[in-house]
Image (cartoon, rainbow, N blue to C red; front, side):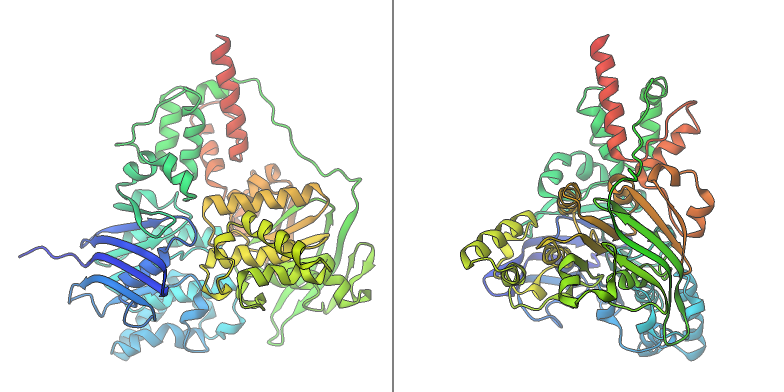
Length: 574
């Protein structure tokens, strides 16, 4: 039988708006049984490429398509795709109806529909929500329902566009463990969180910023062989390879790009077999542990907050929190644990049923709304909810004009901030035409304008490539140094342990733990109850400590970097 690929793209290009190409000269074949990972900087066209592979472009999405796209007949009507924004694919109101909708339209028998619906909801751990209204679910829960809706259709080809972006760490781990068992003829994954995927991936396609394919090959060939180019492009790379690169650039080890798969397991093996782990264990080295000063101004004091939704669900229960000036606090926990609701209360968007909130020593209800929102910036989970102007430039300029700057100053400050947000080349674009990651950066930019005393950020790194995420973090640090406090809801444990001074953990509407990152590492009961997982680099450290006696607990890349520098000093000294 003659070999035929599932999908074949030849010299494909696409423009949503004429004269503004998103993809150019794409040549790609997806073979039967292949699992492909697509990576690249935010805004490079990854999602658009996913839409073409799914045959939604050019049939159902408006734009200028050029080139050839071939789909093998047996899979052309059996493609499932999960979008970045789960709300964009819902067509019913109730969870059960949504998951059953696809199988019903494919003509499944009623008895089979109930079986696949039950199986799919169990897969995403949402069977207990089957009678709930989708509108009452948290963002992460909506993402899980979108996943279940696709799995229920038993597709032959599956495209997943950042499927874990809004999932808590435990749900992410559960979903990724299912990928090797997924019964489909082809799988395409577009992701920024890739460390746990690599051993299940056959091929990596790395996109360039201008919408072309920069590299295509095995995990080793792309991530190890083209590491420097990927970093220069702003592409997210496996976190664990960043550990090894700290030692390689100091001449302490070498990586063979053709063979080495940068997975957590292989990195642990490399550090142990090269003797580096033993050398680290013998270091006389103590990390400086950051503690709360206790003498800084309390920006926010919330006490005994309670909030219940009209359906009777108590989303926040007796929650109390204090935030100092300049603190960067992570608010973490499972999907649906009450994090976003607590932020809405603190931001004055919702009113608590019980409890009180003080901001700068005054109850928030005593503030005129205009004054309060000039001091508190809020970046919503869905950035589109806060866009009000026709262009990216005007969206930022609007905030500067409210502060009374001259038009000349408004233009200068707006372009300066857009440069920092990596959006200068999108200045005259409609905000709704941006990629999800770009929309997130723009919404953050509007909150950064002015003399904010508190920034509340709901999943700020969602959809961000490595360069963009680091850029946002750097902006946050600058504000923190000036006294601005930040409260961040996030599922990104790497960012939490790397950049936050404090971690507040929620479970079932309650704050169950509040402390420093290094203290949470050994709280296995808290981590388990709240669906948290150690960041990848900390997990590597913990597993090495079970092999090498006295190996220290290194919880973030900064600590790995310090250790690598210390070993280099010792080598030079000898």
